[in-house]
Structures are given as C-alpha cells and as structure tokens.
Length: 473
Image 1 (tube, rainbow, N blue to C red):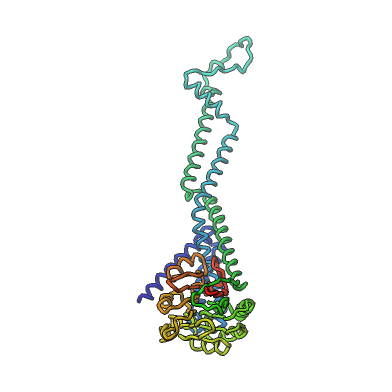
Image 2 (image 1 turned 180 degrees about the horizontal axis):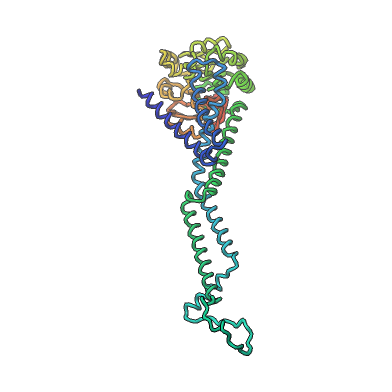
C-alpha cells in the first residue's frame, strides 16, 4: 500500500512538471493550432512514456534490443527534464524584470512620439498660465492698417458663429497634448507594475526569450554531462595511512572502481575504456566494489568480457552491489569468476601486509544473501590491518564494530546529477571522498559509469588509486 501511494505521488509530480514545461516552452511561445504547438504537445506525451519504458523494460524482461531502443531517448529525457525545469525556474525571476525593461522602453518611445507632434509644451504652459492670471496675450494685427472701407450689407449681417481665436486654439492643443502624455505615463507605470497585463506581443517576446535561454542552458548542461560519461573516468590518487600496516606493505596500491553499470547504454566499449584506464595505473590489486551491471548475463555477458584483461600483482576482487540482485547475482558472481575476478561473498583473504575482506550488498537480504560481518571478519587477528570491500557506505558502523581499518565503497555516484548530491547526503554517511568514523576510515568512490541517464553533472566519474601508507615507515 505504501509503495502504491509513493508511486502515485511520484506520477502526480512528474505530470505537474511536464505540464509546467509544456506551458513555458510550448503554450506560451506558439500560436494555437500551429504546427509547432502540435509537435510540442505530442512530445510532451511521448517523451515521458519513453522514460517510463526505459526504466521498466529491463525489469519486465523486455527483449534487450527494445531496452536499447528505449534507453537512450527515455533516460536522456529524464536528465533534460531536470535541467530544463531548473533553468525555467531561474527564468521566472528574470521574466518580470525583462517585462519592466520593455514596458519602460515602450513608454519612452510613446513620449518621444508625443513630443514629435510639433507642439511646444512650454509655450502652451505659458499660454495657460497667462490665461489663468486673468490677462490676455496681445494679439498682433494680421491686416495692415489703412482707411476704413464703406460698410456693405454683408458686413451688417450677423455671423452664425464667431471666428475662433488663435490663442484659444493653442490653449486647447496644449491641453490635449498634456492629457495624452499623462495617459502614456499612466499606461507605462501600470505595465511596469504588472507585466502580466502587458501587450500580447510583449508577453510573447518575453516568453520566447526566456524559453529560448532556458532551453539552451538546460540542453547544454545535458550535453556536457553526457560527454563526461562517454569520455570515460579519470584517475584520482589518494594516500591513506593505516596504523597497523607493516612497513613491508607501505605504498601498496589498490585501484578502486565501482558502479560501472554495464547495460543497454554503456556496453563493451565502456568496459574496455575502464580496463585500459585501470591497467595504466599498474596497481597491486583491483577492487570492483559493486553495481557492475544492469541486466542479465545472457544480455550483457559479452559486454563484461574485457574485465578478463585486468592486470595487477595480487589479482582483482569483486563484491556485489544492489544492482546485481536486480540482475541475477548468482549468475554474475559465477561469470566474473570465469573472467578471472575473485568474488568475496562474506569472505576474507590474507595478503602480505593486511587482511582483505568483502561482504555482500544489503540488497541481498531479500534473497537470504545479505552482508555477514561475523563470517567475513569474526575470527580474524585484529592485530593485522583490515581493508573491507562493501558496496554501500551505510554499513560503516558494522565495519567500525568489527575493527576494520579502511572500508572501500561506491553506490552514491557522488550524486551523479547536481543537485542530487544533496539527496545522496540524506541517505549516506559519506557521498564521496575519504572520512573517518572512530578508528575506521571510509572511502567512497563516485563510480566509473552512470545509472539511468548517461549524464554526470558536478560528479565526474573516477577510478581511484588508494595508496596505503604505513606509519611505521
């Protein structure tokens, strides 16, 4: 019941976001009945359906080719929706400011038009003032003086209307100009105070400018994040001192890689890039700490085959992540063993200078295969340093209880899509990097791949070479 309620809330939220995005990008910028509006409306329905298909096709056992067809547009739209929405929200703050600027520009243009009618407002004001003071300006005679001519019958006939006086015409014209200027100023102030009541052409212009800028910013961000994933992970290096590490093991290098996420989007070429990057660091040991795949061995076994090319002095080790339990964990454990990796299923091996242990992911509890710290660490010699491979950082407190010196984890992707790092912080003690919990240190990798959208923003993919340092050296 709780799952159904959560699903309904999520669907309602997605529907609201899609309606908002449609209104700002389509409804506010296109004419009713236009081709662009029809195309935008169709996209507003098709794109979320593709996203739903991309997220569910693998879980319902759809053919792998269909998963691949749905994955690219469906998952990329989720990333685009996020950054287009964020860009539009920023645009909401810009929209009224741009409206005010345009309203003032129109008001200034109206004032210039009024001033260009040829009427001199100061002269009119002088005329009005003179009239108000009870004096009449002197009117020059337009007819030259001369002897009076005899009166005629027409002169004795009274006119039907007195001729207009030039002073009265000038005064009336000045009043009309003043009233027009006042109306223009009032309209400009009203538009500036309430941009939503601006002229329709002005609203359309503002919507198109803001929408265009938001589209450019959002899509550019997605493009940048996609390039970050497809170009492969970078190499990071950190040094971790361990109090119990003997001098002979000083400088031991572990290449830590997590969250490769081989799947419908990231396939064999992605795996090959990661293997080549790891081998270029010449590590002493390789630790693959979960979420290797998103799919079955039947669909992705060949894409994982480049892992057989990993090279290190002491071998490559693997622990399960939560996505292995979505994809057939037992089959994948057997397959990576065939590729030359050593699975640590709640198990431990003793190396020259320390113990290396691994526990299953907590998602395995649904299959009775969850983490077993007693089995992995219960009977070990605590005078020796211990390094633990565990996919999720949340088991750090169990590691502290069992005297682990260093835990190597992944799972968080560093948030993958900003501002997702803030959500990741709510669910994980450490999102990325090295932190200390009591006598135990926890290192969390951002991962080498991506789940869902093949996009990373603010959380670059990495492979980290952890160099162990002895305090006795």
